[in-house]
Image (cartoon, rainbow, N blue to C red; front, side, top):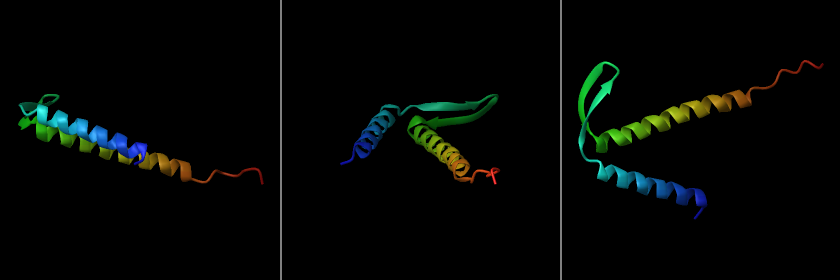
Length: 75
């Protein structure tokens, strides 16, 4: 196995262990708004997915900047 695959599997295992150790229900509050209560076992993966999605969006913008051709003015 590649080292990257092993690291991803270990991180996934740690994440699953953390999920099942945090089963309590917590209130969600954003600034002044309260949205009710949600179990941490649901909130944690949603937060992880949101972070992955934001990272995917930001990495896409960085790749676009690298692919743009440079302006050749030395003609």
